Amino acid sequence: MVGDPYFWLKAVHLIFMVAFIAAMVIYPRYKLHQLKSAPGEPLFETMKDASAMLRKIILNPSIVILWLAGLGMIALQPSVITGPGAGWLHLKLVLVLGLSGLHGYFISIGKKIDKGMEISPRALKMLNELPFILMIFVILLAVLRPF
Image 1 (tube, rainbow, N blue to C red):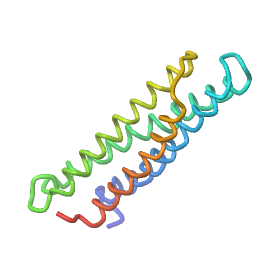
Image 2 (cartoon, rainbow, N blue to C red; image 1 turned 90 degrees about the vertical axis):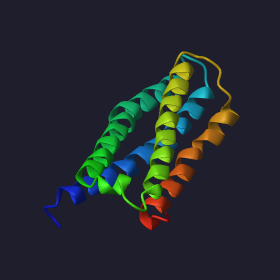
Image 3 (spheres, helix red, strand yellow; image 1 turned 90 degrees about the horizontal axis):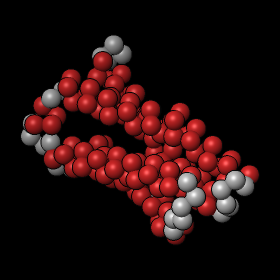
Image 4 (spheres, helix red, strand yellow; image 1 turned 30 degrees about the vertical axis):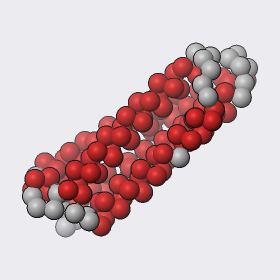
């Protein structure tokens, strides 16, 4: 078990899932703080720099590693996607695609805020909760494999 590549990929997948979701929850918060000031002001520039570092060091690398580890697990056990009872994984992949799209949307909004464009803080606050909610369903599917 210790030397099994599948379990190593699973561990990597879980580690980077935690990093990705944490970053997806904090990134919009940084942008909300940034919206409280104008371009050039200290708070705006501090939050702009902090969110850029978060994106470059944690958020973007995490999503890449997550996908690679997940696809690696499927490659090592292809029956999990085509075999009986694979419906849970199909739904999980749909939710993960949604999270990936949300990641892209957050980055897009962040770049607009960095340029000084107005974004609705209310919409950003509501979107901020979505990664955590999606993560709950992804974990339940992966652990319980209900269908």
